[in-house]
Length: 107
Length: 122
Image 1 (cartoon, each protein chain N blue to C red):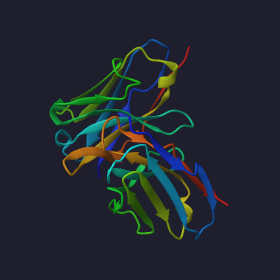
Image 2 (spheres, chains in turn green, red):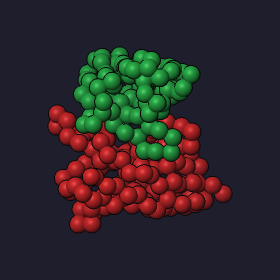
Image 3 (tube, chains in turn cyan, green):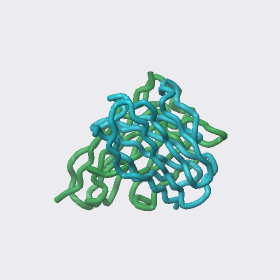
Image 4 (tube, rainbow over the protein chains, first blue to last red):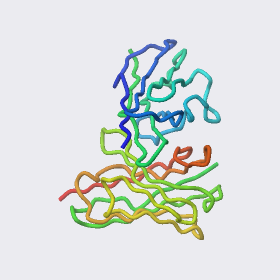
């Protein structure tokens, strides 16, 4: 199994800040990396796939980068609706695995 | 707009069985790989199972292998998850998820249902 490790587990930020979340894969996953946003009581929502491709309708303040084992999700100019939990997911092979999540809350 | 509506979740005792359903609409269900993902209370996301188009292949997390069975009825646009020998650690919200093709694979989830809660407790 490919273990996915996210850091930090939580981060406090203010509206307008830039937040960076890191995801590390236990082995090389190439560009098979996606990011999801989840708000309390709601289903996850796909933000980015293939490391850096924005899903339709996702605003450009979200961006992804990385390759191999180290990846980042950057949220620029945080808006109130961005306070949520973010998960990375590897899609290189089964079993599909998610990172533990990063909660972005209001400072 | 793609719609996925899960049902069948409930409170059951350890060792019992349960079948979840996911009714899909507004897309060509039979053409897509589908999956179940769960989330235990206060925890992260855990992929459970995936089934390819025409049920050609099925994949399972080790934690459910041998106890859960994924299936689909394309004539009814419905995805199922038969869960047997349920354990307390299976307690979670179960989401049905649609995948999309990326470089010949279908392992990312672009649409999710609202989820159905399963509680396993005596």
